[in-house]
Length: 117
Image (cartoon, rainbow, N blue to C red; front, side, top):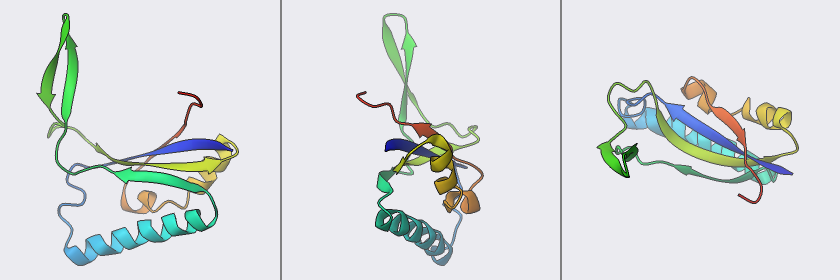
């Protein structure tokens, strides 16, 4: 079985405007989905990234410049990453069609995890 990374972007303010009850409903959808995939032996793991902005390093001459980021003008931020098992990309995509991220956001990316990297 191959492993696939699910890259989960969302609008920068997507969750900050939700009321607590709305946020809990969203979380319940993700939790239920992960529990089903775990029971099916498909879910490997995942991480929700902190809402606080991170830092960006940009090559500059012989070194690197440090910048605050993500920036307000960004259309989306990386909200998290999940790893699943699937036999091929088509199977990974079919598994992902049930991901609640498509209900609560616009899109996500599925990428094959390179073995031995």
